[in-house]
Amino acid sequence: MDATTQTPAPATANAVVKLFVCHGEYRETFYGSGSDDIAAAMDAAVKSSYSSGLFDSADRHYETRATHRAALAQALKNGEVYRGFGWCDFSKVA
Image 1 (cartoon, rainbow, N blue to C red):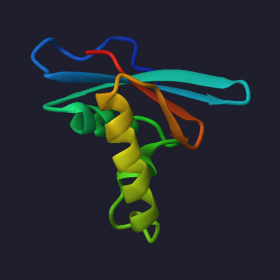
Image 2 (tube, one colour):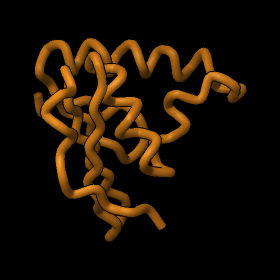
Image 3 (cartoon, rainbow, N blue to C red):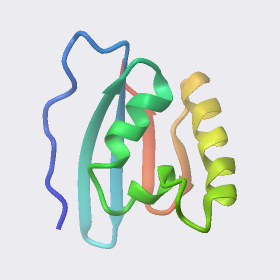
Image 4 (tube, one colour):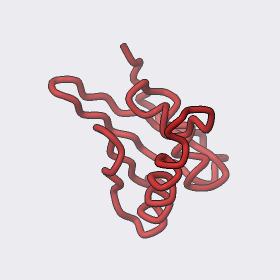
């Protein structure tokens, strides 16, 4: 089972992204930080097995997932919540 990360990333990060996973009764929130929105989203995604495959370029679904990553980047840039990958909601915090 995934571990919950309750505290947002350190203030030194340029971007902070929140990942909310909701699958049935399972609900967890994860935070990621990075130099930009995608780096922060990747940091959050690797903390949950529900979203870790979004950035797995070795997987056979790499091309399909590249489309999801592009849509994620655009949504975060626009200040929107991205809900296009599984049971995951990505949103920009900072």
